[in-house]
Image (cartoon, rainbow, N blue to C red; front, side, top):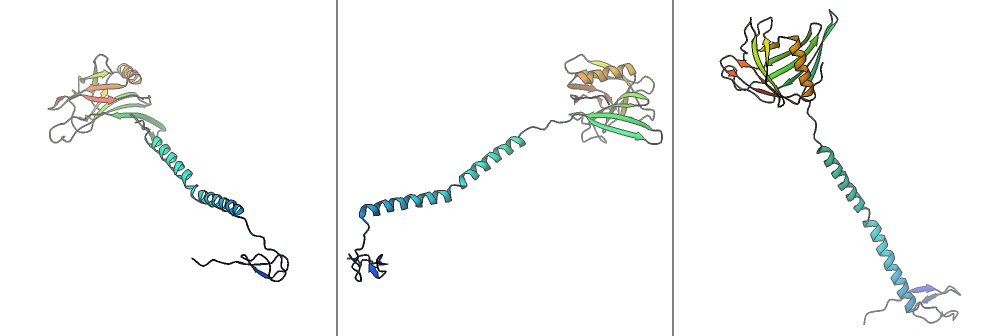
Amino acid sequence: MGEMIMTIKPCKECGAPVSDKADACPMCGAKVKKMGIFLKIILWFFGIMIFFAVVGKIAGPSKPEKVASSQETTQDASVTSEPTKKENWINHVSKDEMRGTETRATRTISTNEADFEFPYNGGSNLVLTVRKGNGGTDLILNITKGQFICSSFDGCKVNFKFDSGKIQTVTMVGSDTHDTDILFVESEKTTKMLIQKLKESKKLIIEPSFFQEGTKQFTFDVEGFQEP
């Protein structure tokens, strides 16, 4: 049999020390009130409830933080998954401070390349430019590496096709400096017609002729064109 623990408490009448096992105070004879078993059970039950309530409060706050973190991750994923729209045209403005004039241009690059022989090997793109200045509006073709075939007297014919429309043959000419990598649309009327087509179309195929290479086709995504 284990040793029973005895608790000493002061007498409520005289203040003398009294054991919780004694029936009365040894000094004044006052009876000691003992806690009933039923009251002990009730106090024990409430003590357990308070214990679990405290534990629940301590452990509880971590859940909302996890939920919030999950929601933020979902929102971040939805933002990063939105596709960025590609700009097909690059705008440029050049100013002549001496003459007080301004030239505006917008250009786009072919989505495909042509493979030429040495010394122009490695892939070449065609660049389409619409330029507006004091001298009027020009539609210009540049090849990044290569040489166009175009007569200095009669010009040359270049095929244009917008979307699923008919092939249009356009007369083009070289530059005043006789550069072999640049062509201009000869007619002002044709230039205006092509610019209008650019405003209405999404796709353009251009087919120029090249020195010792024959004709090559270049495809352009022209959607979003705005006249400079």
